[in-house]
Length: 396
Image (cartoon, rainbow, N blue to C red):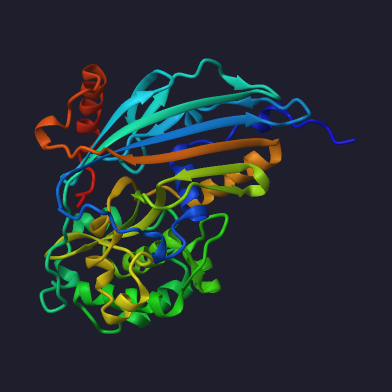
C-alpha cells in the first residue's frame, strides 16, 4: 500500500511563482507557427487599449490526504511593465493585494491575501487578476551592419549586468563556447555578430515545442526549440562574446484564434487561452542603438533568409499588439519550471489557468487613459512601479 506523502512534501520550492508558470506556458503553448499571428484590422497606427484577465485555480486532487501548504509564490501575481510604449493598470483582483515588490529580475509583482494558508484534499482556490493595457505605436531604429559600433564600444557596466553567467544560460559549456567563437570568427561589429548568430540558429535549429523549457545545450543537442528556447540560445551566444542580452516574455493579441485548452504534465497543468498567445524573444544591446528585440520564431523563414536582421525589424513586439510582461535577467526559470512540474505531479495537485485578452472598441487618447479606474489602487501601483524601475535595464 502506498503511504501518503508527508506534509513537508507539499510545500513548493522557493521563488517559483506566477512568472515561472507563465514562462512554462510559453514553452507549452507558444505560437506554433507564423500563421498563428493575425494582422489587426485597424492599421491606423493609433493608440490601442486592451484588457487581460488571468484566472488561476489551485486544485488539491490528492486522494491520500496530502495538504498543499501555500507559499508566498503561490499568491504572487505579475504586474507587467510600464515603459514608453505601454502603460499597464491592475484594475481588479478577486482577492485583496497585500503589497508590491520587485522580483530578482527587476519586474514589479504583487502579493494577494489568501483567505487560508493551505488547500486540503478535495479543495480548491481560485483567484483572478484583470489588467488594462494602453499600447502606443512602436518602432526600432534604422539599423545597418555598416552603422554598427564594435564590441569594445559596449559600456562595461552593461557587460557586468547582462553578460555574466547564471540563469538558464550556460556560458561555461565548452560546446556552446566553441560554437559562439567559431561563428564570430574575427568579426568585431556588434550587429554583424548578432546577425551571424541569427543566421546560424535559423539554419540549424528547427521550431518544436516541448512540455518544459530547454537549456541552451539541450536546444543545441536536439537541434529543436520553441520561442524562448531559441532566444536563450541566442542570449547565451551573445553573453559568451560579451554582448549584453536577456530574455523578455509577453503576450500577443490574437482576435481570430479560437479558444484552445492545453493539457500538460499528465493533467497537472491545464491552460485555456482565449484571443491571446504567450511569446518570448531576446533583448540584445547593440551600440549605437541600444537595446533591440530579436525575435527568432515570429518572423517567417522567408524573411529571415532574406535578411537575418529582419528578426529585429519584424519582431512581434514591434509589428503586432504585443504586451511586454517581464524580463528574465538572472532567474533560472528552466530549473524552476521543472521543480514546479515535479511538485505538482508528486503530490497530485493541479493548476488550471484561463488567460483572456480583449480589445476595447473605442480608441483611447493619452488624456483619457486613466479614466474609470480605482484612483487609490492605481496611485499605489504607480508609486511601487516608480521605485521598482530604479536601476532596471533600459527597455525599448
